[in-house]
Length: 169
Image (tube, rainbow, N blue to C red):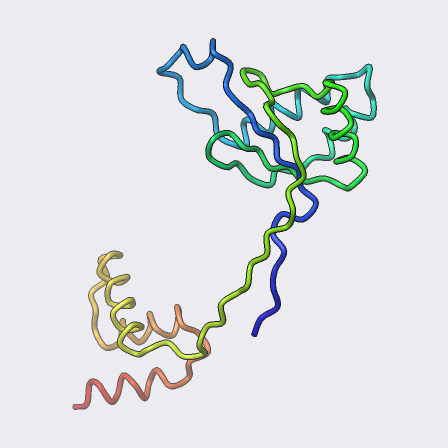
């Protein structure tokens, strides 16, 4: 069994909400997570009077964007602590057009990988190959199918034996 994988260790979550003036524009498209992240970093790196906050914001990495306006960020532990302290002192600046409703630590989410079999059912491989070739408008012949299998399923040295058993002369 594969070892568990830690997702989002050492991360902070920022719960954001749009300002009313921004919501009133209605037709404006909702910004993506990376754009919100860049705006958040920009707002805080401009705090030249608070060099620790500016430096911490410059060390942030985008971790993710969840529905309902949750921005996940990652940084070295010291930088995350600077962000926590700035939040506690009400000095953390939101991205333009947003308000920060909450900031909190994200405890690592554990993922248990699911093991895959070493083998792919032959029927699945053949159907996928024919479907892919049809989508690419490639005429499926014994030769073209064999080329496709060798190219997209490397390491399977028995393709020539399998194709011979299907297309015996």
